[in-house]
Image 1 (spheres, rainbow, N blue to C red):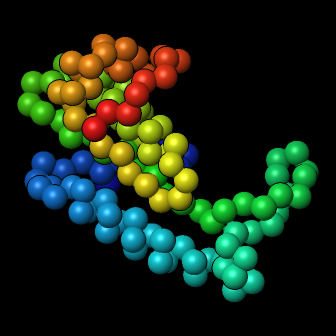
Image 2 (cartoon, rainbow, N blue to C red):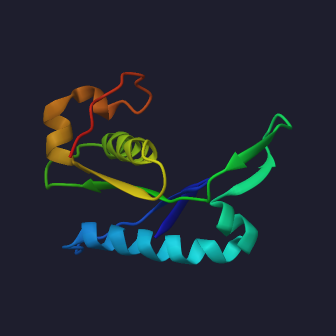
Amino acid sequence: LGHIGGDDFVLLSLNIRDFEMVAQNILKDFSEMILSFYKQEDIDMGGIVAFDRDGNKKRFDFMALSIGIVKVMPGDIDHQQQLSGIATRAKKQAKKTDGNSYFIVNSSDAKEYNEDLWQPDSHTDQPALN
């Protein structure tokens, strides 16, 4: 487990066979534990009321966790920037879903689908890859 920066972390493993179940368990545990950081009145309301960056009073949902999963197949990755680009896409796709979520990208599918996936700064919207 490593901290990339900000609110981004990475978990690397060679032996997770049921990575989808691991992601589901992480999200389940997170959604149960995160409520302990909120007041009962906020839980009853389903979110919090606070001021945004511009000073406007606004309602916010509870903190959520988005997990981008990259299943790397042998021989698919030639450079760390390729992996970074795929991971960025997986994370962005997961964040498009409200609440806790995960999104899986297979490195083989991503490479065959579009070489632009290797460019993390690309502004092209890609369809979801599973």
